[in-house]
Image (cartoon, rainbow, N blue to C red; front, side, top):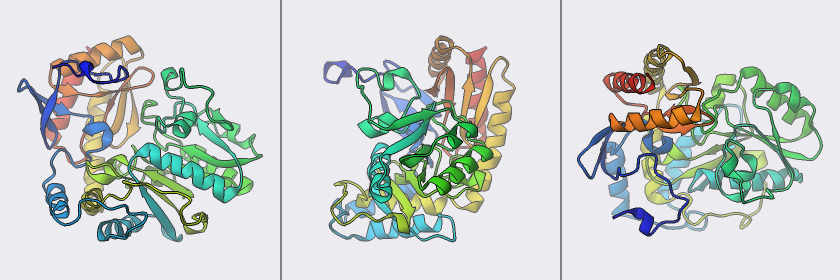
Amino acid sequence: MSRLKYFSPHYRSYYPGTRLEWGCDSLVRDTHDNTYIDATSGWGVLALGHNFPKIQEAATDQIENLTHTCGCNFDHRPQNVLAKEIMKKMPKGHDWELFFTNSGAESVEGAMKLTRYHTKKSCFIAFQGGFHGRTFGAMSLGSAFPRLREGFEPILFGVEILPYNNQDEILKRWPNIAAVFVEPVQGVGGCKVASKEFMKAIRNFCDRSGALMVVDEIQCGIGRTGKFWAFEHSAVVPDIVCSAKALGGGFPLGAVIAKKEIMTWPPGSHGSTFGGHPVACMAGVVVLKTINKIFLEKVKAKSCLLRKGLENIPNCKVNGLGLMLAVDVFDSSRRDEVMRECGENGLLVLPAEPSAIRLLPPLNCKNKVLKEIISILRSAIN
C-alpha cells in the first residue's frame, strides 16, 4: 500500500518503492529482501549503526523501569547520568549547564529564546547555505535551498544572512545582535567546512559586541568529523552548543548546552514534554561512552580511506571532514540521477545543496563497507 494514501504531500522519497524494515550495523533491508549499505545513518542519527547491541540493551532495561516522565518537572536518573557524560565532553575552563530537547530544531529554537532572554537583544546572524531546522525560528535562520522558505514568509524579524566563510562581512555588523548561529560544517549546504579564521572572527565579533556565539552541532557533532565536537577543529570555544541527531543513539533527543552564566532564564520560562526522555537518555549514555579518544582516532583513519577513494573519482569535488563528506557533481539533475543509480546498486545516500551527494555512514562501519561505497558511487558517477 502506498503511503501517499494517508500522508501529507510534503513527504517525499529519495528511493520510491523502497520500504525499509530491518537494519543491522551499516546495512538495511527492504520488504522485497533487497539489502543496501546505509550511508545516511538516518540523517546522521545512527552514529553507531543500526541496532547497536549495547544501545538495545540499555533501552530495553530502561523501558522495563521507567518509560517516560517529563524531565523538566520530575527528576529521573537517566537524564542526570547523560548530563554528567555530556559535561565530560565540554571544553575545560568553563562551567556548563544544559536542558534537553527532543530534536535539533527544538534545540535551535531553545537557543534563540535563551540568547534573546540573556542579552536583551532581538536580532540574529546566520550564514548562506545554513540549515538549522524547519520550525519557524530555525527556518528563519536557514538558507540552504529556496523551498525551505517558499510560501512561509515573512520570516522571523531581525535575521540577517551573511556569506559563509567571509569574516570581513561579520566585522561590519554590530547593533542589537543577540547571537550568531553557525554550523562548523554545513550539512544540507554541502559539507562546507568553516575555516579557523572564520570561526575566530565570529568569536571576536561576539566578544566585542556582546552577542553570543551559537554552534549548530546537530549533524556535525558527536564524533562525526573526527573530533567529538566539530568546533574543536578551530580551537574556538562557543557560548552555546546545539546538539541532537546522534546524541540519542537512534531515539529522539537533543540538548542545548550553554556556559553557566548564560543560563539566566527563570523556572517555567521554557520546557519540553519529551526532552530528556529516559529511554533516549540511556541510549545516549552508551553513545557518549563509546565515542572516546581511541574511537575518534579510528574515525579519522576511516575518513582518510573514504576521502582518498572519493577524490580519485573524476569530474567531482569532495568537501567535508571525518565521515561527513559530500561529493559535488556540479549539476543537480545529474546528482539526482547518481542517487537513483546508487539505490539500484545497493547504496543509500543523501542529497546536499546545490548539487552534491552526502555521505554519513556509521562511524564504526567496516573498511570493506567504505570501499564498497566508493566503488558503487564511482560507478554511478561514471
